[in-house]
Length: 86
Image (tube, rainbow, N blue to C red; front, side, top):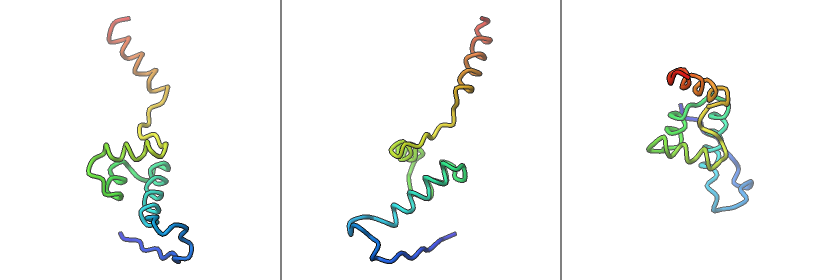
C-alpha cells in the first residue's frame, strides 16, 4: 500500500531538510515502539539492507530493539543454574 500525504511547502523550516524521509522515519519509529511494526517491516519501509542497520537506527533514536526484561534474565539465570546442577 502506498500512502501519499501532501504538506504545504510553507511549513518547511529548512530547505535542506528531507522532510519526507523524516516523516517516514517517524512513522517507522512509532510503529515499532507501539508493536505494530517488526524489525523486518521497519527495514523494508526505510530501505535498509540488513537488520543491523535497523538496530543502529533504533539505537540512534533511543529505542530499544530487544524486548528483554529483568524477569527474562532471571528465568535464564535460574535455568542455567539448573543445567549446571546447582
